[in-house]
Length: 218
Figure 1 (cartoon, helix red, strand yellow):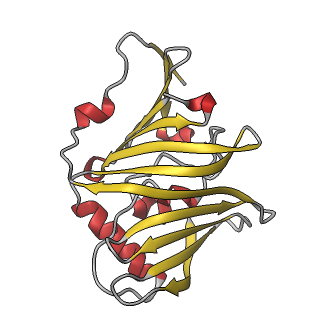
Figure 2: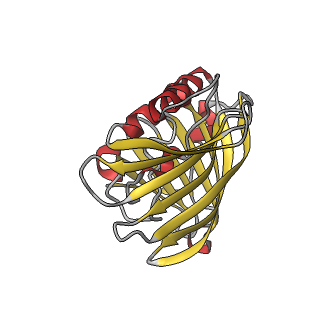
């Protein structure tokens, strides 16, 4: 999965009063995320997969304190019913059609090809995810209590790729994501919905994969 910030996705809930800078918002994302016992939401829209723009629909569930996340795909068709489970050490990807589970060390997982703009490694750790990016606040809409902040992130490496994230003050969470390649082409445009906190998710449930699947270590 090609690494860019759009996985600020997966990731985030926020929680407190007015924020006027990108760092203020990031701090609130991080603080609320760490305070939540568990987080779940749906990500849907379009993203480049195998060089083509395709529909994306997935459910994300995470336990931030354990850096544990589970992503289950409904679309694109090539990934339907696939499951990705990631923690601080490895990424386990279940492939429905072949009934196989590939296990990849976290240090190698970021370099794997996949849906442009999606990085599953740090869905539940916003601070870690943002370490490699410069983030700025580029816009604010709405009135106090229901404002939406638009952040733009670019890699500190100097790459021209960028990601835009919209964060709503009502619940302090991301509600839209866009990723652009180095040529300025939009490669992912997704919304976040069905956002829930503290619904009683357990690590065992998030880690569960078919017991009869073949294990392939990379």
